[in-house]
Image 1 (cartoon, rainbow, N blue to C red):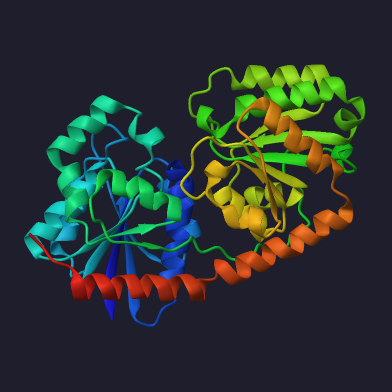
Image 2 (tube, rainbow, N blue to C red):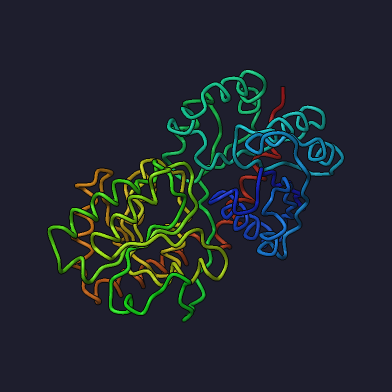
Length: 385
């Protein structure tokens, strides 16, 4: 039996898509007969509410001190040093939990695997450069160099790893995702007038890199030039604000001008499932992603997708369950026009195909077998300095 410690800064809504991906990976890994998992994390302000979604997984949490975007936690450090783990699986970078695992590895002589979750992308690395430079000099560079292997979500992410770590071993293992359980519940934002409209859903963090601004510009221009599209379409934003102070102003301007745009706020649990399943088309014009959980969740619910190449899910384009759009407002507008031309037969075909892709490529059996192979490799071949 391989005893693995999943070490992650947050498992609550504060952790966004990373927390969701870690939860699903932990559920998949524990299904393997030779893997046991303990999730070790920090106790943030949403922990007590969101821990209910982690039923069946052993979770140990600790208080942190100082800034939440660093997460200094002596308790987490002591727990790792006292624990009897065969290896650690670290999720995310640039925070104190990476130092904890580095120290644990040196003192206990045990290996660890790193899942960056997109945090090694150039766009991410360029944010908060002073903080990242200091963390890198103090321990992050040594942490990355000592890693026995990198669990990457896409082939493209290998390029990001290679740019920071020479000769780093890696394995591509996608996120596990179960098929969505059908629901007839309507989301809180639903209005009767939406019943006969085509719903375009943006679901995720409201941040500049996600392309919300360009989507608003494209929507505005298309509605101005095509009154019939405006009448039969509804744009819905769901997610939490991360900067983007003028986001509300843009959505309100669309609502006043065309009467077909709204912001529904963050969605969790049943509200999240209902929101995704209420969509006709999922839209993510992102400029930078690791492996976006929102797209996978849309496919698991049978929802076709408009997305950029930066979403790193080319399988969607290859299998005809997603349409590639550009990052500019003009190219997003072109994509919206194409989606508007889809017949119900087209949508039904894409819906069936998307669920089949989730079933084949992102199943618990497939993911857990690959995780086990990675752990076996690390435990047999890891060398320490």
